[in-house]
Image (tube, rainbow, N blue to C red):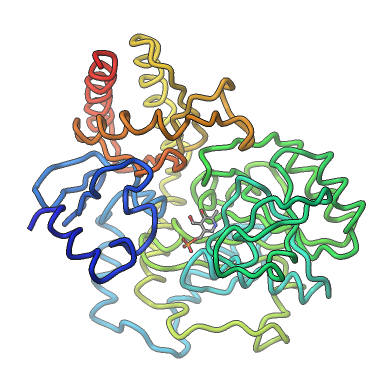
Length: 428
Ligand SMILES: Cc1ncc(COP(=O)(O)O)c(C=O)c1O
């Protein structure tokens, strides 16, 4: 069966035919491609077409698909147990590995997704401070937590409004919202609500509405203003953790958040997330403290060994700076092609993340920097990439991910394919 036929069947049994909205290709048009297998940097569709994959499952696969060392850990675990629902050494080993290497994390609790990690961290912050409000930023995504599915409301002091049907106005009213990078607005919000704000939550490298690189001073300012008001600072490092630096942006910028959330890379491609941070806050979590949080499959041994094998390889082979250098090299070559073919497009990059955009700024910092025709322009580009065997995430607002499996040979092939893509776009 081909992708078109499979999608037709899917539409009958799942909303929009998908298990997560972006997969439906709604923002790029056309039919979603169904994939049957993946290895390293490559995907294979059910039709047998091969793609160099820059979506990499939206970030978990820093080592690429089915890395041999991760595969070995998973296969060996499959012969021991799939889940215990009891104490086991596998989550302990992963927790020790993280706590040992990340100085701002004294203790971690494993969950099954980034969303769960964020939801739990917010609960801890509310319990720690006895306050209800959370300050988030427009242009950051933290999973589908009710209170964070919000947009700017009409009030001046950062009041948020629901951004999804099913999120009540009452829940949305507990969230305050500010534009990224806007210290003045954050100060104004603290002026009005300072004593009510339990936490500031921020993606220190926002990578869900494109790549919105923040000024270091802004992130330091968030640390300072939250400390000043007895508010906790939560760094959501679900994308940036173990990718930008082993200890994420917090380590890269020497900022000490109170709580952090991780996911993606730390589960090696399995459904794993965690929240963690300073002992005084993590000791509030049940059974030690009064904050209830639990999970039937939390600390699932298959995910734990996949995560540990991934983190060990990343750390012990010092992969991050090498991967970042490779990404810079590839991005440089693609930028040269953009210039050669005079394509009205820019490519932002940080670490092993990259994002095509058409902002007037080299590196947009907030939603206001993204032109309104950004998505329209992406449509042709995306489909031309598919044509030439490059798979990008099917949305103009999703970033691209490099993996360790994107080696020299694949980079050369990628550049050749981009040459054809830009040539074809120029001819249209
Ligand atoms: C920064 C950030 N936080 C939280 C999440 C939610 O993670 P999950 O999709 O695993 O629930 C995501 C997912 O993309 C994310 O990028």
